[in-house]
Length: 229
Ligand SMILES: [Zn+2]
Ligand SMILES: [Zn+2]
Image (cartoon, rainbow, N blue to C red; front, side, top):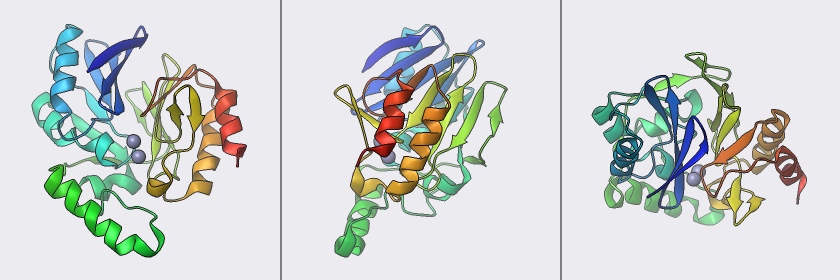
């Protein structure tokens, strides 16, 4: 676990391959994404390290993939938090749809069966109740949901209004200092993902904090990525 301050109000928590973010909201904390199913302990350690109580005002999810939602059930119970996600990704998190659909061509049915098995049995994903919200939803005048479909149908970025930091989930990935497209196999609609990248670039956030790799401050790089073939 590595905890890094990326803004006076915002910490990035590296939990294995994925980034979670803790944002101060008054005396409370808001968590962006919840990590893999075994990620809850890292969040509790991070809160302790920051000298904050083990409570979360909310858990804001960017999309329904296991590495982003796996810890939500445990953390919601432990920290008394409400879990929010865009309405189009809610059913998967609640266990009513596949958590890891993929674009596997002729191997589609087999790949989906393997992922369904591994999410539930191998990685022990536990569904959790969520509050499903839509584009433009505002949480406590502090976070705005920006619907950015493509990677998943309900993929969403969360803009922290006070800092201008945008939590971009898997709308793009920072791979060793270069922005790249999210993993192909798990990106349901690549063209929609590019449109979402353009929309996020147009927001000109102060910092783009994605789910994988260090944050980037360059909206132009995101705009270029959307056009790269
Ligand atoms: Zn993803
Ligand atoms: Zn991811």
